[in-house]
Image (tube, rainbow, N blue to C red; front, top):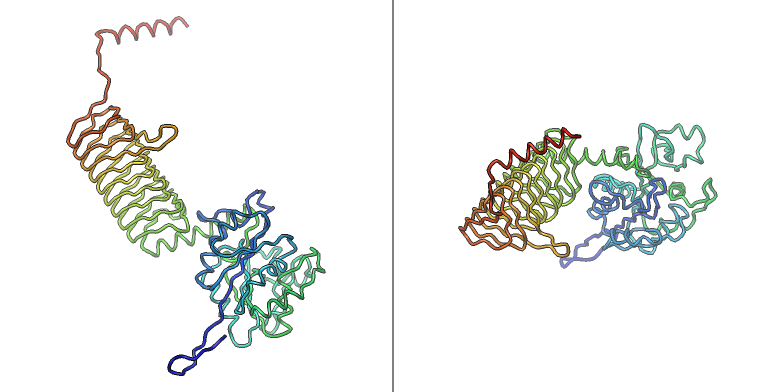
Length: 455
């Protein structure tokens, strides 16, 4: 802690900047994937993004340790600095790669495959470290199945060491308090302990956990216990699925606490950035991809999929609707069954209730788009926009070939192919001329039946 004098002569104390170091160099071998483990998605965003989003609210600075040739991971960590661990020689070695960026304040070592740690747990870790006489703090948990986690050995209320499962005795493996990997210490002391690490263990690696034993020789080491589902690591697809389930439970509870009705919560899947206003109703089997905002009073009906869109107040979406990125549905608008909107602005009170595709479109207020209507927005090379004014009635089975503008109060006759702009208040018909041939229908049917009998 540093101090300075204020204008009135009183001493003002300042905490030295705190730093979170995120270890993210893991290849994710058990994932059976070419994608770095830290980039695997969870709640609609990469694992590492969850940790960064939480850590930036607690710590002053963030540093990410990546492996070689992980440009995509470095991009995901931006604008925070990254350092490269060229040789994967263990967690202690990875932490050492970032020591030049530790600064002089407290440093927390986090893991990219522990993405569900909450702000409160991080805050508890930091506050425990700053408690009187505590030289190092760490996170621990008591999972229902301790499995192969390292064991936290506590004596007389203070942590003495962490024993990796591979190196533990049977008595030590019987301990149920397990290491979560995360620790916090003063930067100067942490550098010293990292420099003293040895790799004389079963794996021949430099364990970050060995820092704990060094710290315990110099002072008090205390642990913060948090729920296992918050601290469990993700090293396989099965563990990723388990973390997704934990995150979804958390997101659903937060939504309901904020005034959202989830009719069947376990069937609704949210993204970490889904935004709900109060009094939204979500029916069963709805998926929210990244970038969705749903405003007050809207109802999302069953089996709908939303991504990158805004749903306005009192809007009715679905069932079986798909809203794609760039879409905004206005106040009290309706999007019905088997309707897809992409990069479309649907005006207040406008309706597209059945079997319709609207892409790259602007639809004016109170306009009604009939069943089976599509906007032809793509010519094979370029995308083109369709602009429909207010109070327009588009008849069923209309094909609107963009670029196209339809004026206010226009009427598009059912079954039309519209290729030219339509003036306000005009009636547009784009049909082929209908011809009725007397008795021809009967004759064709008789010929077909005769052909069938000959087979």
